[in-house]
Amino acid sequence: MMKKQILILPFIFLTVFLSDAIYAQDAKKPASRELKVKWYSFEDAYKLNKKKPKKIFIDVFTEWCGWCKKMDAETFANPLIASYMNENFYCVKLDAERKDTVVLDGVTFVNPNPAGKRSTHQLANEMLRNQMSYPSYVFLNEKGQALSVVPGYQQAKDFECILAYFGTDAYLKTQWEEFRAGFKGKIK
Image 1 (cartoon, rainbow, N blue to C red):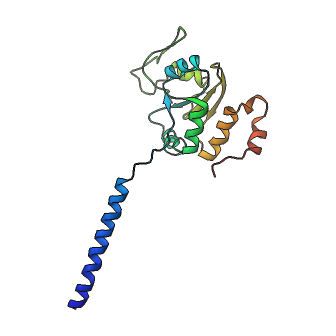
Image 2 (cartoon, rainbow, N blue to C red):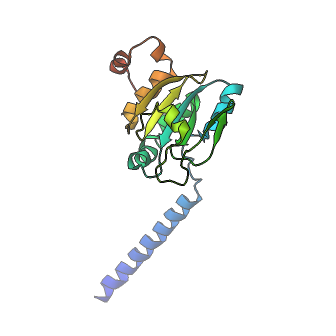
Image 3 (tube, helix red, strand yellow):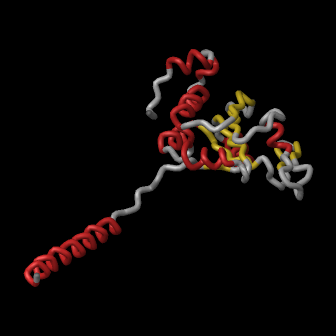
């Protein structure tokens, strides 16, 4: 019995020692930088677009929307999606229930009842054409003109196709159904 304990002790010691050494090496490795979407306020994206025109992508969300949170955690967290969005769009997070006032080119947008629960901001109403659904995504061209509103949660592989449709200007010459049928994405 004593021989078994003596043989087991070195094994336990080596296991603990090696696992600590491996853990210490992992701790020394630099943390990999996860690629994330660079989000702007609506006002900042609007100003940037005036200086250097680029399409604008607007994620219209609310704090209480579960599908909005799922979109953030899964689709927008996908590195291929984040990379494509950062490269091709000024990306905006627009809280549909924001409380402050927004002034763009002399036009004022407010939340008519900022103290109220679930009161929609006029800018969100304008962006979604009064068709309030969360999450919804608005695509604007380089001139700030609305191209389309896409409602609802999207998985990364489906969203990649939507982003490419607007990001590559395919919407100018190809119908959506035709583009989607021939699209070969990188996300599986």
